[in-house]
Length: 310
Image (cartoon, rainbow, N blue to C red; front, side, top):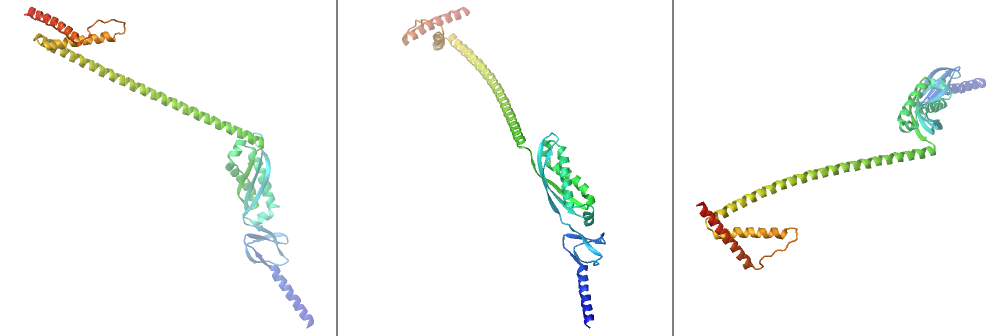
C-alpha cells in the first residue's frame, strides 16, 4: 500500500504539473507565438489557451499596442551644405506577431535605424529653406518610405514626426539678419507706396481744385459780363430818359445828369495814379453854382439844337 500511495502521489503531482504547463493565459494587448520543437505553429490571442506540455512552448510575446520610439538627435547635411541637428518620434503597431517575431531580429532597433537613415536621405535632398518650411512634406515622405520598408515585418508605421530642427548658431544669426533685412525692405516698399499714393491723391486734389477754381472764375466772369451788360443797358436807358427829360425842358433832369457826370469825373481824377494838382471850389454852394452854370450851358445848347431841328 505504501508503494501504491507513493505512485498515486507521484502521478497526481505530475498531472498537476502537466495541467499547469498546458494552460497559458495571454494578456490583453499581447499575442504569443507557439513553437513545437523550435518551429512556429500558431499564434495565441488574448485569453486562456491549452498547449501540449514538453512539446509546445511559448516563443515570442509580442506587444500588439501602438508603440512610440524616440529618434535620437543626429546631424544632417542639407543639399546646400548646411548642417542641422534633427530628432523625432516614430509611432508603429505590430499587425502580425509571427512576422514581427521571426522576420527581423530586434524589431525596435531595426525600425529606429531605418528611420534615422531615411531622415538623412530625405532631408539631405532638400535645401535649408525647404527643410524649415516643409516639415509636413518631410513627415509624409518619411512615413511612406519607412512604412513600405517595414511591411514585410508585419508592422504598420502610423506616424513619423520631426520634433526639432536646429541649425548652427551662426546660421541662425544670419537668418535673423536676413529676415530683418527682408522686413525692412517690405516696410520701405510700403512707405514708398504710401507716399506715392499720397502724392497721387494730392495731385488729384490739386487738379480738382484748379478745375473748380477755373470753373468759378468762368462763372464769375460770366456773371461780371452779365452785370456790365445790364449796367450798360441801365445807363443807356437812363441816358435816354435824361435826354427825353432835357428835350422836354425838365431842369431837374439836366441837373441830375450834369451832377452825375461831374462826380464821376472827379472820382476818376482823384483815383488816377499820376501826380496831380486839382483846383476846384471847396464850398458846396460853389460846386452847386458851377453845376448850375453847366446846366444853363447845357440847356441853352439843347434849346438851340431843338430850334434847329424845328
